[in-house]
Image 1 (cartoon, rainbow, N blue to C red):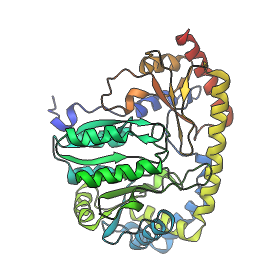
Image 2: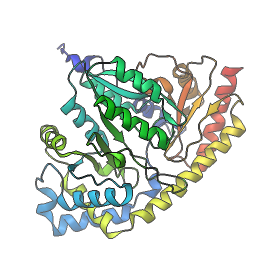
Image 3: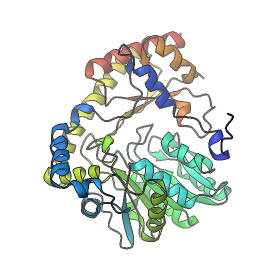
Image 4: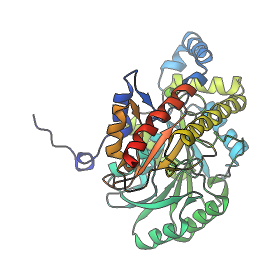
Length: 396
């Protein structure tokens, strides 16, 4: 049978990162391609005990339907932590628990974007978000990312030149894929431009807790006096991604529509994982866990950088991140890293080519993203050595 695929999906491509995982399944292949947290940091035993406890002692609460907005005690914990840690406590906002931050991004797009509307994104940007925008027929406009964040002059031009701009999507802290951190001055400028042109900001902050130094960078949402910032967050990078606990904080009128959209998608985020997460977060010291996570990633990041300095050709440029999970590299010379990624597989090493993160994914890019969070020190060093072999060959 021939299926007539909908217009919104017929030209959609699957994530290249997920395709790369097929190669990474080979135990001889070293993957520096994913964006997964370090599995050794998962509090697996504690979560197993909590799962057993709730299924034995609270089976109805654990296994019955819940309310779409999320388990009330967990929502309250999230609101209190946002106020305490991020200074996000604007009156008139509300918070919904979603099945990972990705769902929050998709639901916001579903509620706001009509086919042909414009969404302004950083370029490069997170493919999970850009694919969500594409799936609703959004017209994507890319704004280049510099080492201190989005180019604000380019952003203003994009706001002037495009009609029906529904929102600006940004990951200002330890951006995916570049690892850059937007300066405070630029955060203020982005907010001022959104206010000037009457446009919403969707601030995505999955990595904000992962500062190597422990320094926290002020969120754009903490500057929001006008109710023009929606804030997407998650516990995936500091607890466990498989629990699928994310949240979206935005003006209450917008959250009300997102609740309806979520009812259509999945009714509610699973009660069992909400209960487990709330219990872990309130019975343990999350901030102490985060300190250990930061130390782990700071060490792995430095291990990767030292290996890059030892094995990469000297003219390969890269950004030294202040936190997060990624290092962004540029080989220059017009090299196509999509084609190069296939050669790298022959050396049993995988990375994500830069075109994956562009508005036009057919663009030839000399850039690539490396991840350091999941591999051991030994595999990071060996993986970079193998990449160095590939890079030296092509640059020669």
